[in-house]
Length: 192
Ligand code: RB5
Image (tube, rainbow, N blue to C red; front, side):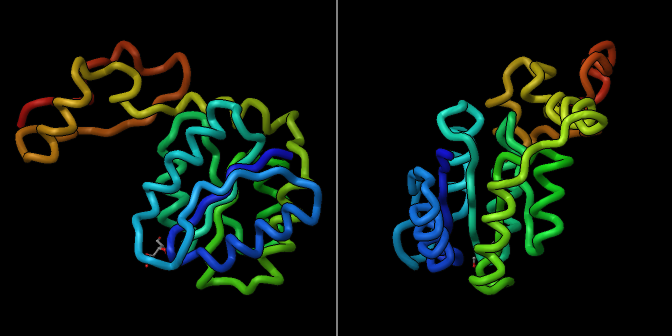
């Protein structure tokens, strides 16, 4: 399998161990950094990894930070990504069978290396079950934020205005395919 792997400073040692595991088990990987324990920001690693997986350049992604939380939140903001934080083998298994997770996240400060490698092994070797889970995952993938869906004419300007306090999100809703388009403009105010 072709894996995109990345971490922040809080996950560096575990990333190195996972890379070794991947190589020993016949997987190909690309390391998106970070390459040492110097402090960095996890979105800077998560987004390139997530985009590469979403673009189909890799089969799966593995992201590690101190807790696995921040790096997973960042990855899940990229369309097409289903990042699952797994700190036990049952969740690793289920995240593949039920959720078709395409990114695994873990926290180096939470679990030991032995368990982490078991999780990676199970996660890489479990197939999506499809069936009743298929429609659910399709709905999951149809959930896009209003900005991405074109609900706002100029998303960059609107985001800048929100940051500057000149605009605010009145109601942020996630939509499933086929719903909500008629509600355009009702859920988003681009001026305070
Ligand atoms: C870095 O100290 C830490 O906050 C980061 O690795 C991660 O745990 C964030 O979710």
